[in-house]
Length: 302
Image (cartoon, rainbow, N blue to C red; front, side, top):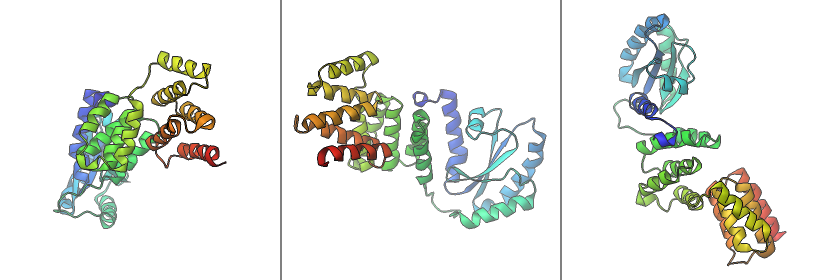
């Protein structure tokens, strides 16, 4: 996991948080209290939180305390700037800020409102609704923080190993982070029944294109060869594949589209086939793909 952007201590902190907060929150409501030994207001609030959590235990409410001095990484992830900071957590996500609820009546009032809205059924078997977590991981990946997205997706896969969106997302995040060997290892662990799922197939397309990521000098040499002789289609294809693997998708698309314009039938339509593979790897709903598909349509049908 350290290779996904977390060091060993951070990974241990994430594991502790998952066990004490995320997992209980999948079927119940967790009161998450960020505190410290030196914090007077924290010590004043603690008995109130403990009393209310005890009274609401049969309704699926539990209390989890995070010492900000001992768990600085977790506190940083929640952007805790002052303490006490208190959240209500459900299915791994904050659903309410309880920090200003300093009395029993205030806290109970908010909890009653939350419990009336949330599908919490104490005593039932866990139901892991991972959709919000997948959405969060995808948002992080879209923002360009691939290592963090990979870490989130890895946690989701542990919770729901048979979820195709989680498995595919983990693969794509690892690829985006440049962790090709990790992606290969993760692919080997994907359940067999998910192999044909579109989410996994999309990730496999991305992995296929990323397997031969070139060094900067190699990419420069391939670019020079393709530029020196635009009629050399094989050199153009090699450069386009390397450019995409190196993260230069605009350059890859430009080259493939230029090749299609010159000879769309070359090598049984290899340039178009590779461009379509890139579209699948990026995601057919991606705005960038939509723009490139319009360019392709103009070439083919304009």
